[in-house]
Amino acid sequence: MIVLTKRNGERFLLNHHQILTIESIPESKIVMTNRDYYIVKETPEDIIKKIQEYSAKVQDVYREVTVVDKRHRS
Image (tube, rainbow, N blue to C red):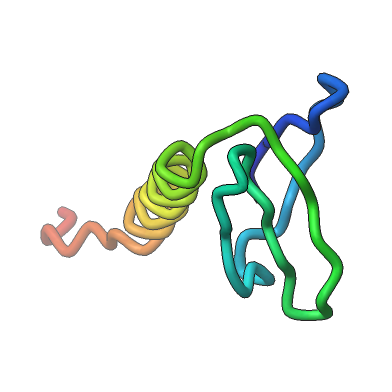
């Protein structure tokens, strides 16, 4: 989930897996798969960057958890 800011300054978490489209109107309008939408202060580029950063963190945690020490123990 990513943190975004509504026009009134309220911050909220958004499940980025549910985003259908992002429009620039000039704020960003995020349309969800259920057709609900949010108007946020972040630009589409900022939103994409937040999604990329979050996804990278998840991958790093996954890699860290799945690394197995295969050195022979004595």
